[in-house]
Image (cartoon, rainbow, N blue to C red; front, side, top):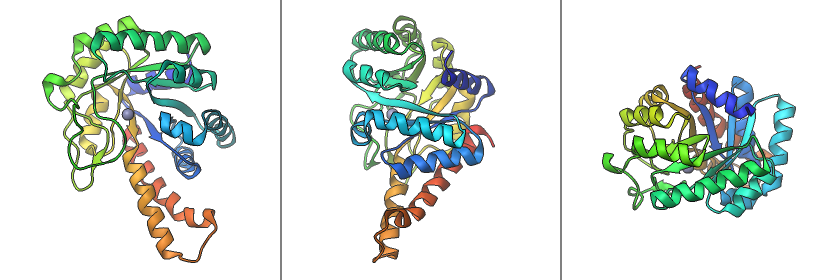
Length: 288
Ligand SMILES: [Zn+2]
């Protein structure tokens, strides 16, 4: 069993969740790593296809491995929302710890077929890599929402159904499953996101028999997070909240220091702001 799978399974039985944060640059990565070090908790760094293209597929892998060694922390790398089998293979070759194969927009049978192929390809290249499947569409992209994403599952009849979850896991061989249970990608600026269907999480977890991953964690209330963890969520994705904090911090820093040109000086406040958000989330998810 890979170290990451052991940690996720441990979280599943301890009823805590591993924090997953999307990063697109060095200061975001540093903020997550330093906070993980401070709290002595494991973390997963996620890079979507767009983020991987920007940072570099291999560069991300090398950076995270060296940070893990230097800081002596459990820090893992996930290829978030991967849509093509070519990009699945690319991430596996670069040594990623896990891959999210996102077939959530496909029809059920097609999603099974493609995800099964993704599992086969990824594990052939890296035996102990984890593959996560997506069942139920929750919108895409981490942004500030003005309305609910078009086509996203927002009512109980569109949420992931336990029977389908069981079949999906059995036939594809995924190690983890991301359901649609009221969560959506992105967050509203002035209001909380819709409430989670905790009962459904419990049913899907029981039927699927694998750890569940909650995408679209930004904008969810603390009470919902804790109830979701209790019901079987073992990994929680945060992206929009961190992006928003990064941007606000950067704007403030530029305004306060109009003549400063040293990036590391401008970024110190940005980093501190992000660390605050990450710490709050990690304390909640890990119950510390
Ligand atoms: Zn996601």
